[in-house]
Image 1 (cartoon, rainbow, N blue to C red):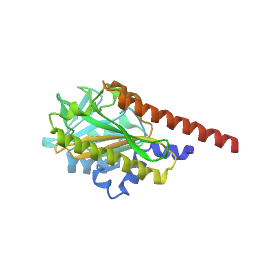
Image 2 (tube, rainbow, N blue to C red):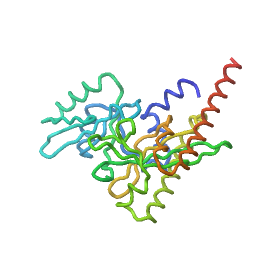
Image 3 (cartoon, rainbow, N blue to C red):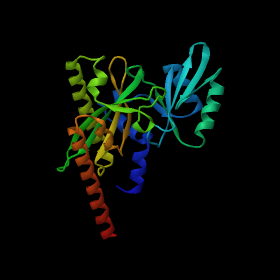
Image 4 (cartoon, one colour):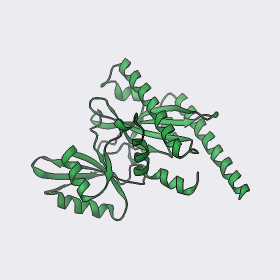
Length: 263
């Protein structure tokens, strides 16, 4: 993959547009638009709560949860700090100061399921095997820090077995159905992105469940961390993810050396 392709794959906006081209995936992509004053105002009016996030970025850095409260009051939370405003103008000024000149997106807010009063989401790891086809190699829950809005491990989130997080929300049979659906969704997403970018070998799909257990694709990470799976007691999933991750790196190095020789 050349540097311009790699740059494009780091753009959440670019990946969102590619996912929206697939009829089967489109219903699970939350409404996402570029950050502008008009979009902020209209999306808050429509959804009441949105996430404002950097177009390029990792580990949940820079993500803000923005809400329109009763009586036309507004608020946003960044990390552990929450600020309140009397009108949308003041909200926009404060957000824009924090954002600066960086490219940001606004995404429809998903009211995530909770475990012990903490939000959680799901990471589905999808990797290409030695023969080439995509496989869903791991699935794990990510329990958010009690005072933060993101679930990333690097922001204080806790990787956990998915069954533990789902046990108070879904019976065992429904959990199995959901896992099957999420694994299939991950493979479909990888195949869709591969149409445009044929050379990448792994993705981490972050999926949030709303209160009706409907899955929403929050983000697709093309440089997923395999080591969060090492937090599980059962190491079999981690071993598989890590072996495929190493294979992807070997293939990447081999492709790089071939290019160097031919140039």
